[in-house]
Amino acid sequence: MGSRLRGNPKQIFELFVEIGRPSEGDQEPFILQQYPADYGDEDVLKSVSKFAFPCANESVAVDHFTFVLTDIEGKFKFGFCRHATGALTCLCIVSYLPWYEIFYKLLNYLADILNRNEKNHIDRLLEATHQHEVPSPGSEVIAVTPDFAEKFVFTAPNPSLLPEIPQNRNLTEYYSAVSSANMIVVFVSMLFERRVLITSKKLSRLTACIHGAASLLYPLHWYVLSQYPLHWYVPSLYPLHWQHLYIPVLPQHLIDYCSAPMPYLIGIHSSLFQVSALKKHLRSHQADRMMGDGLARIFLKAMVAILGSYRDALRFHLGEKITFDSDAFVISRSPSMKPFLENLLQLQTFQQFIAERLDLLNAGQGFMDEFEIETNLWADKWKTDSRSVWGKMQPPR
Image 1 (cartoon, rainbow, N blue to C red):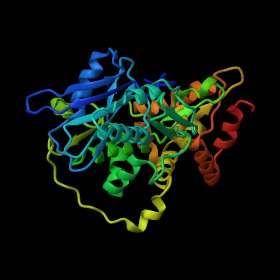
Image 2: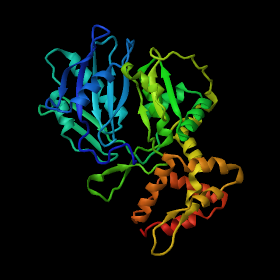
Image 3: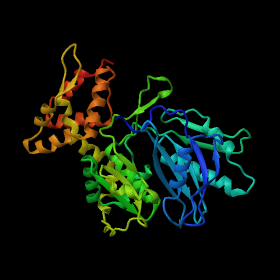
Image 4: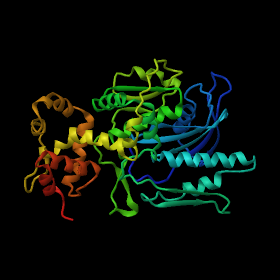
């Protein structure tokens, strides 16, 4: 299985819906309006309605959260939601792009338009945004209605950068809510494909922590090949992709998924799953080190320490494809790490990581991302041969 993120999506977003909260507990949420009006995927429409109100939760402040759907090809669709204080409706945007801050900003703008007076309509702004081509990283997007009455401006995220605190909302929330010790427990549990369940009283915190935890397993969501037209997006080369059940917020009707006999990363509102509250850990002395990409880089270095020696196990012979020697990978490290590395070889996420790297090397494309840069520094520090071997495998520039 490859990346769960769709490469080169055709539109900035697929669907907008406003969903009404049911007045009775046994009633289903219902769609009040949608754009495009002719959107025909009934399964998505039904799922969005249920995920928009995953539990009986009264918002005491504006609450943003994100759910994830999986399409027929196994690719993620992200549902970005906004609950207003005491509101009876939920605004939701569905997109293949994991642009959390941008879509939360758009939802706030749409809510502002709707709240001005009953005669205001949002279709023209939605149409301008929907019809805009997917921008290249770092470029500015200006979506303007035909009468210039409404304008939405944003800058497309640059996926070649590590997520930063406080700019990255998910990682910031994760660092604020979870102790360092528990972050390491979650990280190792995901690395070894365990079942991970996170709970919170706030939907915004819950889904941010799920996405924040996942971002430390694969820090970048996309890798951009600028030689292709329109800067096509293709799945990230970053170390590992979570290949298993991924549900940032679990609706009440899917509560049995918690008993699934498979690896998962699931978020569940505390009203549906009561657990003892974890003690808060004071980490003010660490705050400065965690700003910017500090937290993401700490985990990136951990990934390099675990995976960086994979380059010492690459085998290259003139006229033949580059291969990976599992035995060489195991013996490239100290004997004390042998059991750990042997287990690592069996993990689907690690196998996918090696397969992606080999595919690109054998296709003659080459690559140099944050992981490989950090691996070069690691190789220099430990005096390994991986830097020189790696240089021979890269295509000439």
